[in-house]
Amino acid sequence: MILFLKTLSNVIFLSCLALSIPGV
Image (cartoon, rainbow, N blue to C red; front, side):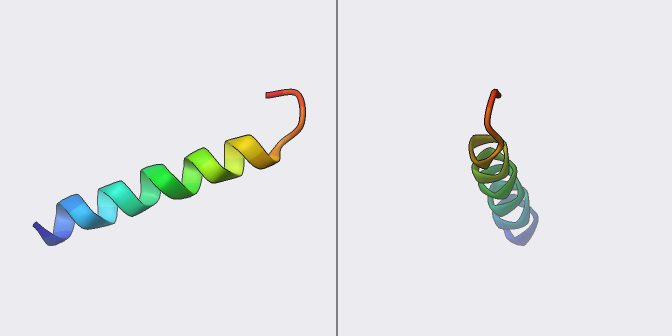
């Protein structure tokens, strides 16, 4: 369960990071 939460948080972080980059 902990591993799932860490993976989910990583996915959310990467998604926000991608959205913050213009042109992507």
